[in-house]
Length: 259
Length: 256
Picture (cartoon, rainbow over the protein chains, first blue to last red):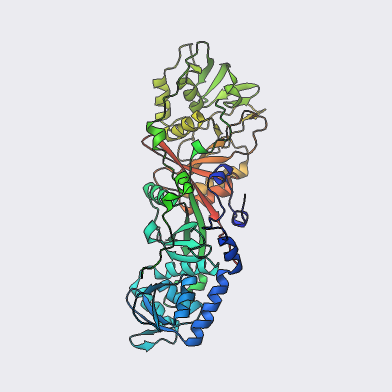
C-alpha cells in the first residue's frame, strides 16, 4: 500500500525495495494515527507560540544550550511538540527547559515567541544571538538550516546522537509513532560525511537496524557568504534531500527462475 | 522522576529484524551450488578484435536471457562467456582453432579490464546472474538489425558507458559529462522473468553503476540520473561481497 509519503516523493521507486521497506508510518498503538490526525503538530506549535509570546517567556544562553523558564502548561506544550528537555527540579510553579541551539534559535527567530538574554542583557535582535551560537558551535548555520527546514515541514525533530546521526524525525509525537528517518546533515562545501564506502555501510546499517531510512540533507550555504554574520543569509541557503538505502538481491526476487 | 524516552527498543520489532541486512548467513552458511558440467554444452568462438564471442552452438534456454543478437547471430560479452564457462554451460573456442580457452585465460582478460568489464563488474554480474537476475550491458540493445560494432579502441574504465550509442548528441553530452563523472553505469538489470524477450525487454528494474573507490558524489549521481531513465543502484565490492545502494532525491512530505 503506497502512502501519501510515497506518492509525494519524486523518486524512482524500485518495487522490490518498496515491498520490503514499508513506506507507511509505524504507529505505536491502535488509535494513534487517529489521534495524530486530530491534533496536527502545526496546531500544537501555534498554541505553543501564542502561549510563550503572551507570557514573554525568556531564557539565557550558555556555551552549549539555552535554559528557558516556563510555566507548567507551557512545559507540557513544549513536550508535545518535542522542543527541549526538562530539567528535573523541585520547583513547583516554574519549569526549566534545556533547549539546543537549533531549537532555541527556531523559537526566537522563526516563531518569535521567546526572549533570550546574553551576559545579563536581553537580546533585541537576532544578530548577536546568531553570532554567539556560531561562535560556540561550528557548522551551526548549516545545522540550523537543516533543523528549520524539517520543522517548517511540520516534522518533529530530535537529536539523533544515539543512532549516530544528527537528527531523527517523526511525523508526530514519539509516543504515537516511530521515527521514519535518521538525518545526516552535509554541507555542500564541507563534504566531510559519508566520504568513504565504510561510512555509507555503517550509517545505512545502523539506521536500518532501527528500522529507519537514512536521509541526507545537503545544505548549500555558499550563496551569500558576505552576510554569514547575519541570520538573514539563511534565506538564500538551499536544502536538498536524498535517501540512501541498501538493496538486498536475495530478498527481492519475484520469480525463482534461474538462467 | 525519569524523563521518558519515547523511542522504545527497536530490536523487539519484527520489522527491524527484517530490515537488518545481515547477509552473513548467505556468505558462510550457503550451500555450494551443484554445478552441472554438461558434455555437449553451448559453444562460442572468441573474436579478439570485437572483444566478444560469437555463439555457434546453443544449448538450453539460457540464451533467451544472455547474449545480444546482431543480423540473426548471437554474440556474448566477456562476462557472459566467463560466467557460462564457469558453470559449465559454455565452451569458448579460440579464434584460430578449436582449442577451448581456459578459465585461467578468461579470468586474466577480466582482471586486465579489457573488453569493457573489470573484475568488480564481473563480481556483480556473476552474483546477480546466480540469483536469477537478467543482466545486459548498459546502452547496448539486446537486438538490432545492425552489424555488431567493433569494440571502440578507447573503451576503458575511465569512460562513461554507452560504447554502442548511435546518437551523436548523446555522445557529445557524454564527453562533456566525462570530466566530473568517475561513476559509470555498467549493467541493465531485470528481475528474474521466465517470459523475458530480447525483442521487447522493457525498462530495466535498475542500472548497476560503479563509482570505484569512493561513494558517488551528489553531482555524479545527478549527472548520471539525467542520462539514465531507470533507477540507479551503486555497487560496492569488498572481499568478493557485493553491496548495493540506491541514492534517491526526494521531497520530504509537508505534514498538516
